[in-house]
Image (tube, rainbow, N blue to C red):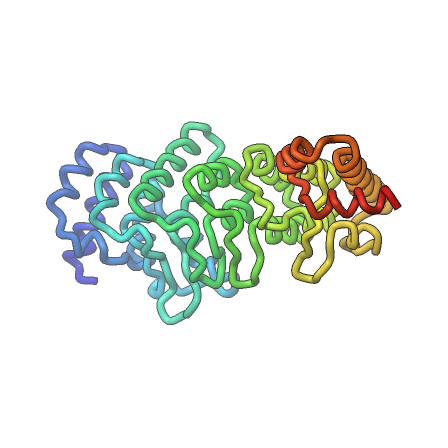
Length: 332
């Protein structure tokens, strides 16, 4: 990066830090596109005191020893978004690559996206949180890929929101098309990853996130979330999933280990941390639901005319095969 390019970028950042969106948009309109897309060295950004936290976050993104300042490369758009002014982000977002990451030169597999940078911030003021969410919306509308899984760490925006316990960002991503069934490089969807992290780190807001997903219909049957919740032993979330996702019926599908829900319960295949009291409650909930489904199926199979019975079975999600077998077994 030449001194002329940095001088232009520094002028833009200084305007951004003042909060004058109109002046920023007018100035940025005359800046060449290649200048807006040239990443900035971490050592240069450290000269602006208000952007030092961004550089520090980027340096430690690898989880190991901090990257040298001279090796850090941060996109201009990320630095502008860090200021929390959505209008400024919108002024240049259509002329830059919103999926360009910050990175540590010379180290492979270490990336830090625009959304990562905003999620890491946890301001106390509600107005500041709202402005950062507005910046995220602008980035998403300009093509930021929420479901990208081409990175070894923080495989998706949802995963980053869970790891930082950012509930507002978590809800925002789901509303804007983030797919909770997307699997990361470890083969885990968001429910699997969240429960693993909750067990290891004790995330306090996990229940709020998953409950919101259940209530708003973001947990789908194809995710097999109930299997993981049963193993984890969260009684309240299990009840919600059974009632809202599966309409009170225990699914008979098998997870990756080849076990059904009732197999997990009856074989006591819970995670080690689940107490005996929770195991008993889960056993009661799942077996009661299974018995109720069997009673309903048998009643429908024996007490209704054929045409009406099949109509009710279809609405209840019960197959003709199960009803026919239950009727045969009942007669014998």
